[in-house]
Image (cartoon, rainbow, N blue to C red; front, side, top):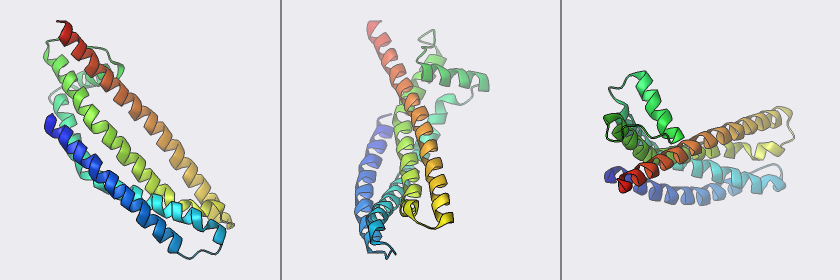
Length: 191
């Protein structure tokens, strides 16, 4: 488990550097690109900064999240689908599995600990990807062309709505896993 946490810490540090560099490089690139209206140049710079930083950060996290996802499946291996759903729901809703010393309870604890390492990185990767997709559309939001304006508004609205929904769902999963781990640790210290 410590190896997975160390890998996640390295990925976070690497991604922060890549995102900050991408913000600067994207802003310089966006400012340097020609645009028909000078008033949109700042918005274009922000959009390109989001695009370069978001996509760079996403690709920085891909290898780590892919590796962690395979570890997330280990506690669920050889379980029937019904038992696997029960285990995941127990962790998400912080319902401890009884008896506490059973194999299923240990699997749930392992699943919750790995979820605490994996899920924040997956959420960050997802949000960075959406920022990267949203960025190039920012300047077109205020364009006067009918199709570009309509497409950009629909696309940006859809991206923001989906990002908010998934962020809420994944944040609840993280909160559930954190609560499950804390509950198990409290239970182990009282015994």
